[in-house]
Image (cartoon, rainbow, N blue to C red):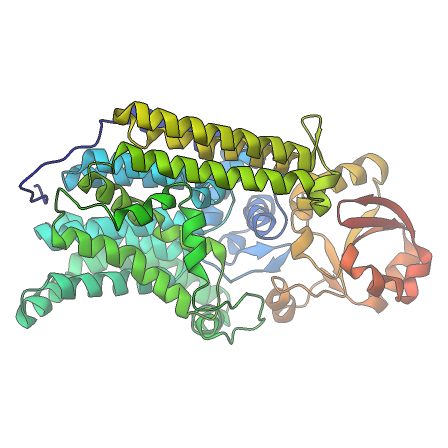
Length: 561
């Protein structure tokens, strides 16, 4: 069934499907395991599936545990899939990031499939390239977090739901409900809220009358579709409520309602201004976002059907509005809107015959100017920790400087290429994010001491073996340590938000008081890792006099008694 209505058919230069998949595999696989597990979020979400496999207790698969304590903030699908990856391939960095990488690859497949359904296959292939090479997706597809998994499931639900709304085919509805249930298990009720808001809005826009609107809404109440949704989504929620009595209040109220209202305990998230996501949209779609202003001045020679335009606009604008209204804001929330935002941009470019060669060349020259300005800044900047790094034999700032110079030259070359050879379209711009990825991998490899505890773990295993390792105060900023030590780590005088409820709910030996640690350090040899910002507090403790500084790595110092 074709959903394109046009009196003048315009086609993009054909992009072979094999080239889309080849570039997608490059952006997802290059350097996937080249740098260690990052502290904070990635360390948390790698340790939970490791503990699922290590403990071997079914309870840990229902109520996830982090560093030996119950962790109920998120649903378990990401943990289950990552545990499965570890079981198959071992506990490697690339295996930890395999789920988000495959999720991004799934988005590529969904976009090209959807493009065929709406008779815009070339635009969909271009959109898939824009999506997979956008800076935000490059970052999120190689970082172990929930959002890329949510993105693929919610995108599948929305696309299938739109096709059901247009065609009335029940199999589309069933696919939509199955994807939505998996999206719920990926990141919670935000999936249902976003799906419901988008679907409700474009149903209003599609309806020809009030009766037609209610008829369309009634179609979603199909008992088989709802049954499939609950069959997939309900079992874990029921099991979690039975396994942990406080789960229902904690998960449904504290983690969803109170988080949105900015009253969740503990308050460990950022609340930005209403325009927080607007500049970040530009960064997430970079370099493709630089084509957006041109669309305002170039007349379309082909008209996309109103129903499709309405759906795509709702699918990314409504989530951005929802996240903007929420009191809890984070950069990574934006990845969920990228597939359909990229698709709408690609279709708009196709409707305008890819914009003229000189406008594409102008975009390339603007990018060349931006990279040249950044290179000038990097050449004279100190860069704090970056200046201390050695990357491929160059100082950190010098490496970044020359990479930015290369990007400026590359941008200028792209400008000449798209002007001289118009049939290349915007495809040459893919080279820019590839160069950025190369630069980022180099920085991440060199900055391991600042971003991960792997170098500290190597020091502990080589020179301080036999000592129990303690973390002082903040767990999140050193969260990869349990993953690399292959066991939970005890925390002194904890200030951890992620361990807050796990420590509060059940008696444990993970979180120890200053008094308890003072006694422990009298009885045996131990090591303590202290962050730079906590050194003043540590030096004031009574037991600090027992310890001497042994090694400083990145922003942490290792003390031994």
